[in-house]
Length: 305
View (spheres, rainbow, N blue to C red):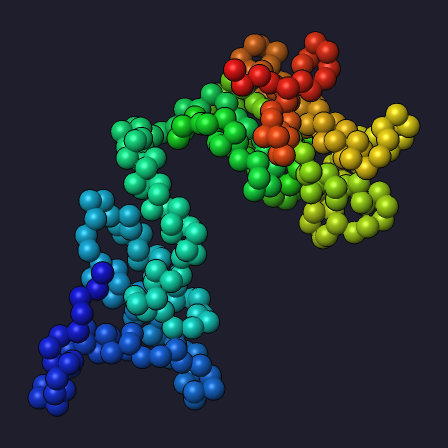
C-alpha cells in the first residue's frame, strides 16, 4: 500500500512548495484524462508511468522481491504502452475480476497452507511423471479430475486435445514444444491424451464437413481430424449426430496417440520401455472417466472404488 498524503496536502498548500511525492500523489488522484479533455495521451501516459514508479517505490516490502532488477525493464516496457485510461493504486484491486480474487483468497487460505512445504520444494524444480494432453474446455480440468497435487502433472491444453504430427516447418508449434520439453527435460513416463464429451473442437470438425466455417485459426487446427472424420461419416453403423460426435471424440484421441509416435524422442522412449502412451475420455454429465483398453480397442469406464 502507498502511504497517504502528508498533512500539508490536507491543509494549506501555499505555506511550502509541494514535494515530489506530494505532486505524484495529487497526480494519481486526478481523474482519467481523455483527448476530449484537451489533454494529450502523452500526458496520460506520463501519469501512468509516474503511478507505476510510485507504486513500486512505496509498496510494502515482501519476504522475497519478485522484481529485483527486472523492474527496470518492466517500467521501460510500460513506457511503450499507450494506456486506455489512468492507473492509480485506488483502483488496483478493481482490475482483478472478483471471481479470481475470491478464488486466490481461498487458495492462499486453503490449499497453499496445506501444501506450503511442497511449494517451497517445487521452487527448486519440477519432476512430474505424467503428461496430460487435454482440451482447453473449462469443464475438463485434468488437475481436478485426477485430484493432482501441485507438481504432479505436466499439462498442455489446446482445442480438442489434438497432437499434430511431427514437423519442422517454420511456425509456432506450441503443443510440439511442450511435448519436446516433457520428454527431453522432464523424462516423462506416461503421456495421456484426454478427450471429452460434447467437445466443441470435434463439433467444429463435423460442421466443416458440411461447409460450415470454423474460424481462421480453429478451422485449420481441427482439419487435423479430417481423415478420421471422413471415416466416421462414411461408417453407416454410426447413426445420429450424438453417436458421430462421440465416435469422432474417441477417434481423435487415437489419432493423437498415433501422431505422438511420429516424434523421434517419443517413439524411442516407448520402444525402450521408458514411456507408456494412454488414451482417455471424460464424460462431463456423469463426471465419469473412460480409459482406452489396448486389448479390446475400446474405451471402458474406470471404477472409482
